[in-house]
Length: 464
Image 1: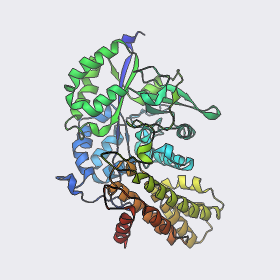
Image 2: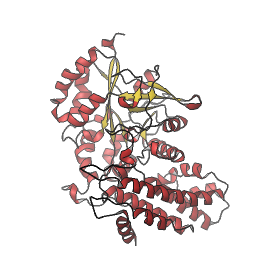
Image 3: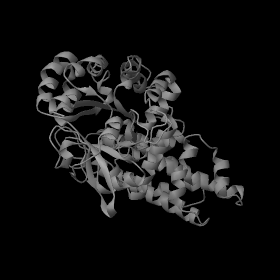
Image 4: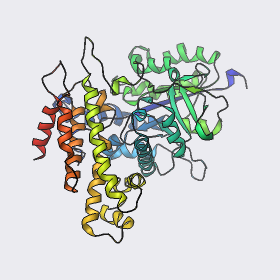
């Protein structure tokens, strides 16, 4: 085939909202700055998720959804949730089974910053949640913020994931403008496929869609010329909230692009799953370690923060250290308890997802693993597993994307830490909360008199 005969276009939207409110119930509550809507989830749902569902856009794109958002949609907008799950449209009897959706990390964690066992838990939990929603094994996996390192890719491959997505600036050796798929060789003879998004066009859609003149004009002026000197797949990947929330009404741009204008420009619209099944990776590329799709080099946004003329976010380093120390003590208590029952603590934690998803009741589930153990010990272990769940929630990427020390996301993470510490104490182990309070005392910023210790006191007062 000539280049002019072999051009495909895929749009991938990653849809996600930060978890907020009560970590035990998932209730967000009222957020006055979201007016006239009750909270930001409702506001964004009405401007983006519902319009895209009603216009049928999920039937034509690849997409991934953060689990907290899916949970909220299932409870508050079941029709939109059903549209998302049903738009996956996988073909029965086909192996492997392609669809429109990709899995993602359960708690939207920046995986290169997680310990290996936590990477594996986030991936296993994400796959289990995906299977519950879409009824199939995922082929692809969306890395939160496209943050990547080799250890993460190995964990994906070990979990049976066949491909992921990266930005052009995160790889070496790809064909510019061609999404692949490419092959990344991993240690011990493993490998994984990678699709590479078109960074320039993805950025145009992400940040300038209102000024592109509509889908027809943009397709004629940009996609048509592109087709003359490229072949294979062009991948545009962006935040799904671009289409209707960040830019009001632009779900229409997406609708006209995937239903009409891309074809007029000579592109066949496809999904990542479908293209992957039809086109095996042939060219090998290398991955830039510990990178993301963000503007900044490296992963400092989620680790140390920075101090510039606009913001002092160096408090992020103190917060991460406090969460790491808390997680280590929670892990120690949990591992000590589980090893007393001759079980692998981390394998058991991975399997706990069936309780988290409501597929099994906690007491019955733990009895399957410890049939001859007394009720008190089972209850203790369930408390420690719940503490593990809360500890994972602490590390959502949004905890560190929020640039306000006193913002909702740091508050949510500290609430998770306090609740987890309380569960560990109830299980009869050392008071994790004492160390947490000490660590949060040094979480400060020149931008606010609020400190991490201030937030912790507010959290504890609210929990009493």
